[in-house]
Image (cartoon, rainbow, N blue to C red):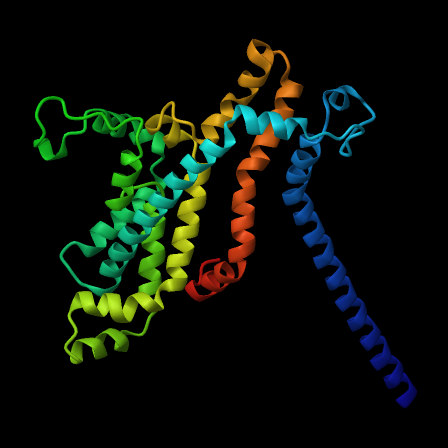
Length: 312
């Protein structure tokens, strides 16, 4: 009898170990599959950016170039006028991110800390703005900035802001820019998660609303502000649609990338899609490389900010 019980216990232990090993292998396969789905397009772009013109017509070449070259990077750097485009894109993305951070932090704090008439309705509009596609409102926005007339105070037809950074700056500063609804929601949730006793103690000590905000609440909201700034910078850096409409012919990285195949291959670029793809892949990598470096240096702060704000 005792021998049978020992055999059953040993069998149960073996089955338990087998199930644990099976779970570990299953999770490992899932992680490998997800990594493959995410990384394979990037690996393909990196490999093709080093391929020569002969490699793309060689059927034996798959991922590893037979004649690796840096010609694609040289052409992309020269014809995209990369230095100028990079500076223009960086200035635009940094300024827009800074104004979005300021406006969304103030608006989020207002929704989290104060009660006012129609508060739920206005916050509903903030959330509703997330589902409105930019294409739906681009025409009135374009006309507004083409004939910009601040509250009708300017004489004539107003001034033309198209082709400048002002459309992005005005939208960001007023809390109506691209993805501002999401940023306001993030900051509201962050401020709501802070202890109410902090603000109440500041009020008891005689601090007003502005002093309480800047001296007490704002230092504790740095993790949420890091998330908003990074998300805003990345979205503005990669934006093509609004940049095309508002900035026009200025040399910005997404616009320079679009013109790269035509600039290198001339009128034949439509008949040479394989060679055009080499240039597009190379230019794309040059655009996302600063974002990758930014994430590598700020990874610690970014992960900490996401954990503290509860964003998943």
